[in-house]
Image 1 (cartoon, helix red, strand yellow):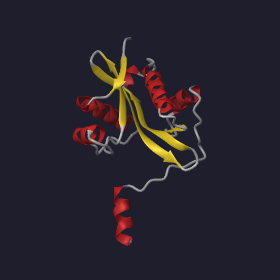
Image 2 (image 1 turned 30 degrees about the vertical axis):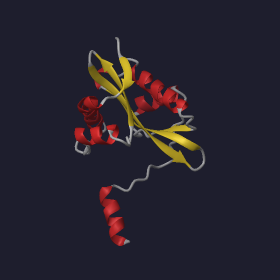
Image 3 (image 1 turned 90 degrees about the vertical axis):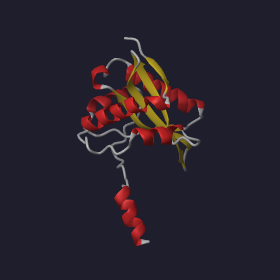
Length: 159
């Protein structure tokens, strides 16, 4: 199968959102996606982009994405956060995931990043095995901590 890995364009964001929704369904949270095409276009392609997105294109259709953004570690310095690496279900195992991860690693290297961070849901054993096969350390002794939008509002209300 032939595919192309490239930097996403604003006009790709509908197809990117479709893949985000596909991932949400896979992760058993189909109602969790709040971001819109307009949000993705504004946040990723304005004067100060919040993220960089790589896409895998097959027959003029986006079939995979890797969305990253810059972070900073007080211990290491510059790091990249891989928010999501998604390949359409029908093309998993085709090499697209590896090609997208390769692009993320090359991008991080070009920025002299000290680390690439991401999360993987604990029951997604195929993804965990994939990441470990690439040399990633899946740190099962760390917990993800979040304040969601409502928790932020509640916190602010208490200040």
